[in-house]
Amino acid sequence: MATPTKGPVKGPAEERTENVVPVRPPATARSLLRGLASWASVAWFLVPALVLFLVFVLAPIAVAVRTGFFKWGGIGPMDDFVGFENYTKLFADQVFLGDMGRGLYLIVLSITVQLPFALFTAVLLNQKLRGRAVYRMLFFAPYILSGVVTAVLFTMIFLPGDGVADHLVGALGLEGLQGKWLAEPSTVMPTLFLVMTWKYFGFHMMLFLAGLQGIPREILDAASIDGAGAWQRFRYVTLPLLGPTIRISVFLSVIGAIQLFDLVWVMTAGGPNHSSETMALSMFQFGFKRYQVGYASAISVVLFMISLVFSLFYQRYVLRRDLSGAVTTGGGR
Picture 1: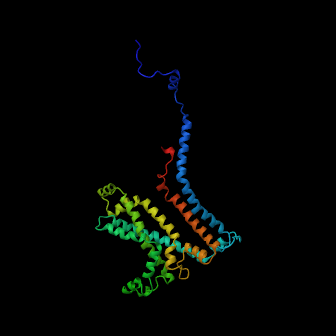
Picture 2: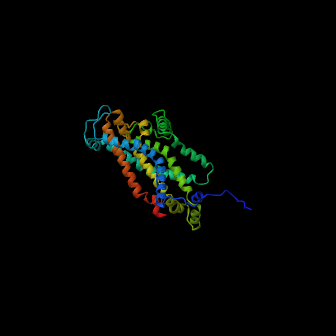
Picture 3: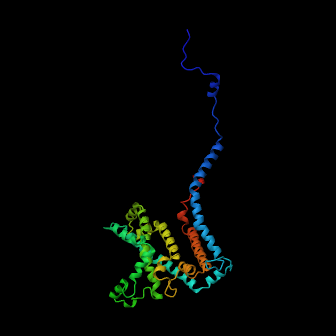
């Protein structure tokens, strides 16, 4: 009697097929394929950003550098090559040298007045105060306003005769300041700095608040147990730990002061007699009001180089220890 089979009988060809082990690509080939796939995904996200950076950053810089070597009014062919004449004329111009001096004036006041005031406010609002969230919102709100809106608002406040500022100093017995806020060379820059501080100190205050809230409470408690008073805790514990935030705030203040334009343009247009003009405003005046595009391009190149050199120097020598642990390489794994 035949024994029944438990399944279909397989032929010799099928048995040979089952015994074949699938061939895998070598390990180096698999690594290469994975690397190519990885680079393809990186390129998919990186190329659009690089194209935008090339079109809207690098290309305008190249055009400005090229235009700075020509005497050109913005219309017609650019064929009057003058070499470095625009740059030599620029550094011989007392108005432009004054623009650089006014930029330095704003930088010094921003670092010595605006930032300490913002830090003091941040330390105060970091305490347990009733309604501190409301105060934070009120102090930060001016930063949300555009520069043009802020400038129009303070132009009305400093309006000679009818402005709120004139009525206020008149009530305080300081009639000598009435009508001089934006009209006198001796008062226009302090007035503009006052407006800058009102608008931007809230931003720096929020930066300092974020830094203060990142300081572990245990460190301050340990300093208190060791007998450190409030000033000693601030001087030897809080301030050093707040160093990275302060350095970033200083950097933003300097760059902002160098490139200041909108507030000055709306409030004074550089007057009276160029006494409130900045480098950015001078560039706009020559490019769009006087149609000296080549000279304005030279100003833009100088402004760019000042910002670039300062940024590289600041990153290399000031932010170096803050950034040293932020960049890692594969060898550090």
